[in-house]
Image (cartoon, rainbow, N blue to C red; front, side, top):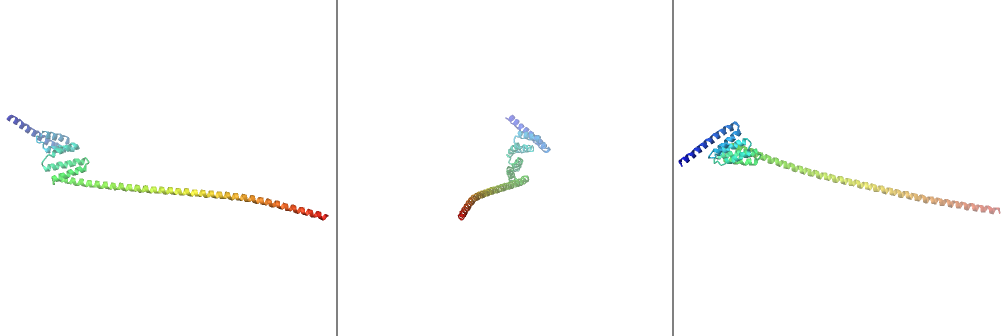
Length: 242
C-alpha cells in the first residue's frame, strides 16, 4: 500500500509539473500573439491538471477567441465558470459577452456584461462594454422605429396617391362619359335638324306641286273664259249681220 501511495503521489506531482510548464509556455506564446500554439499548450495543461483549474480553461478559451473560434471558446468559458473566485468568474462572463458580441448577438452580450458587473463592480471593462452595447441597442431600436414610421408614412402616401389616381381616373371617366353624352346629344340634334330640313323640303315640294296645280287650273279657267268670250263675240257679230 505504501508503494502504491507513493506512485500515485509521484504521478500527481508529475502532472502538476507538466501542467505548470505547459501553462507557462501557453502564456508566453499568447503574449507573442501565437494563439494557435498557446491553444495547444493550454489544452495540454488543462488535460494534465488533476485539479482542472478554471484558469486554464479560461486561458484556453481566450486563445480560441483570438482565432475567432467563438463556439469552441464559449465551451471553455463555460468550464471556467466552475470557479468560486468572483473576480475570475466576472472576467469569464465579460469574455463570454465579448464572444456573443463578435457573433453579432448584442442582446446576449448585454446580459453577460451585466452579470460580470454584478459579480465584480470593479470590472471596469465589463461596465464600459455594457453601456456601449446598451446604447447601441437603443439606437437600433430607435432606428427600427424610425424605419417603421417611414414605411408606414410611405404606405400611407402610396395609399393616398392611389386614391387620388382612382379619383382622377373616375373624373376622367366621368368627363369622357359627359363628352360622349354631349356628342350623342349633338348627333341627336343634328338628326333632328336633318329630319326637320327633310320635312321642310318635303313640305316645300308639296306646296310647289299644289301651287303648280293651282296655276294650271287658273290657266285652264282663263282659257275657258277666253274661249267663252270669243264665242259670245262671234255670236254677237253674227246677229249683227242679220
